[in-house]
Image (cartoon, rainbow, N blue to C red; front, side, top):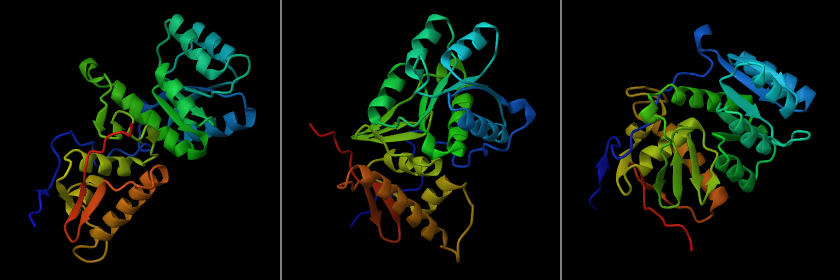
Length: 270
């Protein structure tokens, strides 16, 4: 059997395999958040956690307070918005912001985690959509990705969407979708999927996958090839997340003692 060998992917640019930790920031990096949620206790707790993650936070109870704050010259880098707000739901605040010339990035943090809610939020211009159950740590990472992307030159800011059959990747926010459903991958898992899917049908070595998880030359595990166990565990978690959406998922294939590949570019069902 002829085994296609691939040490690294080149068809798509690889996301930085060793991103700067979100919490390792200096005062000059502090991002200003406008956080809007009508639950007083939740707003207080999450606001405090976001401060612990290195953000400056202005917490507001409803859309009217947010609009008044911004109209009065209040500043912010990102708006974190709940869906179920009193009087005016969060989703209906987006066109109001646009009409007032306010074009800050918007992230929905909500318990309304259905696919329909997420699609509507993204269609109306939100940059991300985070289920409250995922926790503040995930939210902080998503916000940091958006802010870092916004610092790129203007010609690089248009969102890049990569598609491989039923797999859709949004590198700007490190999200992967299968059959239009968010797979909820971690950042490391997203990087692995992107690496494999960048060259359909070509095997990627265990070492290359591991370097994608950490950095080139990183050593961990027991023995010279101990890193293979870590790779297998990560691939197992990724497969399980895809199979939770599609029980027939089988795109990630293994060549024993060598590595993995994205086996085929499946087309969406009619």
